[in-house]
Length: 222
Image (cartoon, rainbow, N blue to C red; front, side, top):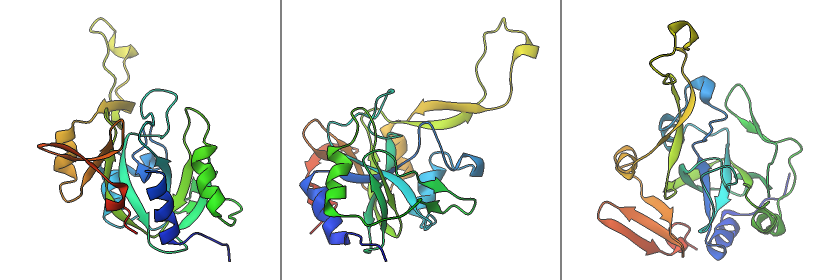
């Protein structure tokens, strides 16, 4: 049996680093496209408790980048997770665990190994500049929804063509693209969960009447 950190140890690390464990709706979308799991269906699937096979996540902090090419997560909208047991954390890597989703939706990691406190630290301290880290998590609680300041998600849509382009040169098959997500849509879609984001100094809870700065211990209590 591999050695893994307890939920209390994981929460202590997250509190100490003012960090959130987030499974993002990929932008661009990776696993799940063939099953039609685009936003918000993919995140609602997780919230409903149907992702027991494991999820690929990233640890993110205030100051991280969520848009453009050099960014610290493969998305900008996601669900904030909290491990339930000492078996919840499957793998941790400063960049990529090499995890893959099989046909049954299980997230598998090659050569699973022990996870030490140093591994948790390295997932942030050795994260390549302008890149993401990966934690693979099973058996978790959803603590809320996270969105960056300019959230966008993947969608499938038919490309728009210039009016002068001949019909035989147009493709009517939907292809991957991106769209911006308004905060009103997030409040409406995830009305039963708190919505979090980052300010320049910390974590904020977003509300229709404004945002308030919070302590990460409100999400990951001792």
